[in-house]
View 1 (cartoon, rainbow, N blue to C red):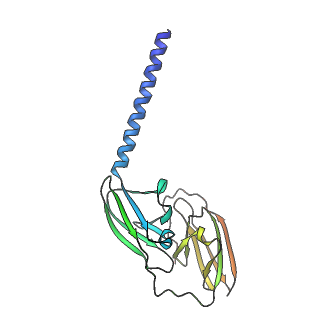
View 2 (view 1 turned 60 degrees about the horizontal axis):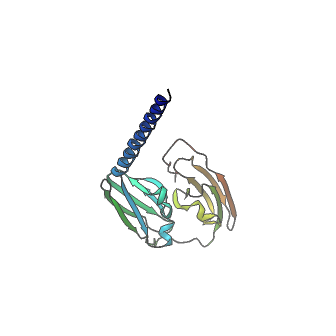
Amino acid sequence: MRIRKYSCALYSCALVVACLAVFVQASYAGNEVLGELQLEAASKVEKTSGVWIDGQYLGYLEELKGSKKILLLPGDHKITVRQNGYLDFTQDVVLHPGEKQLLNVKMVKDTRFVMPAVTAEVKISVNPDRAAVFLDGLYVGHAAEFGSGLIVAPGHRKIAISLPGYQTFSTEVDLAPKQKFEIKTDLLKSGEPQMVAPEK
């Protein structure tokens, strides 16, 4: 009886190891199909800029590495990088299976952007602080940048804070000149993997 139990135990262990080997090989093969896109920032401006791929927000450039590295299906992809006060950086890329491609990102100042002479300030404290912040429908940065305050023009402002996998937080405020306003919130998780773009 002991010999039979010992044989069964060996058989079970062998079966588990075999299953694990198949799982590892399948996972490895799955990664081999994907291509990796690495974004290289020219300065701090680019590092804090928001990244969109095929119209979907991923996060700010500096965080998209390690466990958050960009893995994409082979084919054509449109890359867009945005920063408040700068022109959008756009680039079309073609990725092949297992390919690792490096894209250098350099933002160019938008000469049409002018800071208002009279301002108000919105302090933003949000969890997760990597969420994208939109002012009147335009991306201005990620929440962690505005703990000390986002400078805006007085008047009626629409503010949205959004991140894939979370419900979008939206609010509208009427700001007087030199007024300081604070937003504090925890984003609620949702079943939607994609971020809903805020209305302008």
